[in-house]
Image (cartoon, rainbow, N blue to C red; front, side):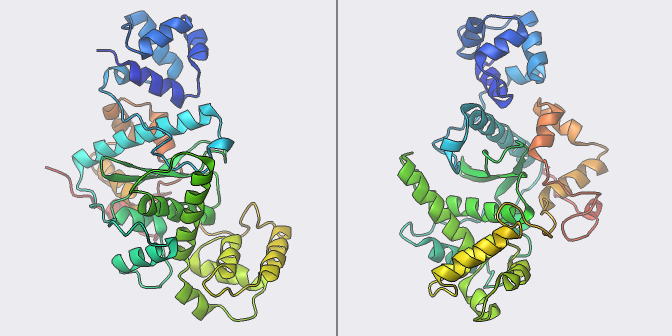
Length: 366
């Protein structure tokens, strides 16, 4: 039967209100409402119009219920800066992303999730250190954050939203951990975003905040503290950084931890025993801002890409298939699959470490 929840998902993904969709499809807003709430079934003519306007295959609307994520379980940075359309479009991307990974899980043996439960009373810094020790990372810099998360069973996808309002976000769904990364930022900030969302998955899995602004701000601060400590362990920072710290030194040193200049400056000022005074930190931030490092990262590092999806593409090519076949099997528009993988796919047939992707293989589930 026609599934009204699927119609609602596709409409929200395309950032349309019920009234706007009705106008484009040449039907009444009441018709859209009745279809979405399951009061009516769509006739073939109406369904074809809706599918054409939304850009989704007709068979998409006959699939079973989607995940239907809500803002209460998703770690959006700041709901106040997002419009309702932006929030709903991102949640719908999350719904589609869950289905993409379900498709993947049914065909390949994916890495098992390795994200242990820690004492919820741990500080963000202690939790970051505990996870590093659990994963055997010691205090060395993380060479590839996306590769690490994928290897530990965290399901990573992209967001092609062309807006900074919809930041990276994460959520738990059926005991699976998901992270969506917005490509709108620099590579360094995207790495920090990934660590930030990892912080949410670790720190806030035991319960959600009430949704109040104060609780949201507290959770965001905690996730930032986790990310800072996870990417830049205090022991390593103290060994590598001299006592006399300048903006030029930060610009050279940040490459070790693959973070933004501002993130490193902040870390130095907020260690257990700070290496920058409040005045020094403020002065360095002003200097970095003058050089363009407040909103961007001049001379930045290459963007990380997905090793897992590189292997998936390799396997598909070996089977004479492509992402078009993936979209077809999922009854999703090809453009939607592309958006979910935007800027996380390896470029020019190589993986993050320079190797040829086509030589990597996934184990196919028999």
